[in-house]
Image 1: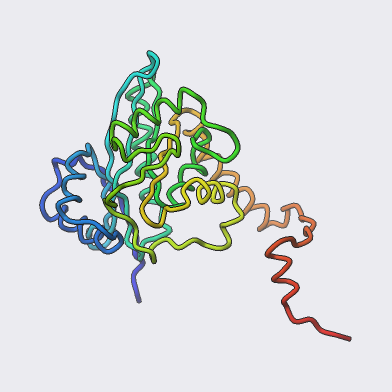
Image 2 (image 1 turned 180 degrees about the vertical axis):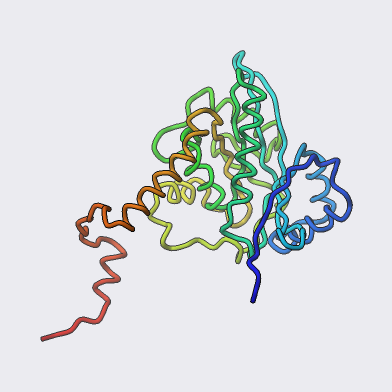
Length: 276
């Protein structure tokens, strides 16, 4: 019987990584990223504070990771702590698991508890729509977003972080990183656009805002770590569980089908019909 491939997480300080850990991280990274070198990978890793390692529960091998860096600054007299997500990858045999999600959430909670009187934000750069969806669908307050403009204070914070870390590669008018020489990008087969996702407002926004993401352009983003964020995830899970229970016992409300429009209508019209 084939065993299930399950992940466990371990958060460690970057200086505590041994050579075997670094070699394993590079092997996973090199499978999924193009236009990267081991030297660039090591140089980027050295700038980070911590790394979430994802290990196979059975044999303890590293099957993914996410690097993290904490940044502090003052914006208009307000102290801000930002957590920057660097290189992140999970081997495809383990896609769909939640080990990284929960490990990263615990990390954010810990940073917020250590800085209760300061604003805490997740700072990420996104070259793929799936990364952007992690932000838009888990952080009640996030920017940029499709339904309202970024407020001035948050935009100042985002510009400050992006310019400090990436210099002239950051284009403030676009909110994008555009590199003269791409420092690395996901290989084209890794995260192809799911056609079923195109109509989602946040996906449409990402594709419109970062139209050249496939060549390595990155959208600079913020997600606020606060009480709303801390309760948002558990409440979503609770609502999902309630819906599943209601469906199981037959209490789920029956929805009236809506007429198909757009692509769905075209697909229905193309179906063969039975003539009487």
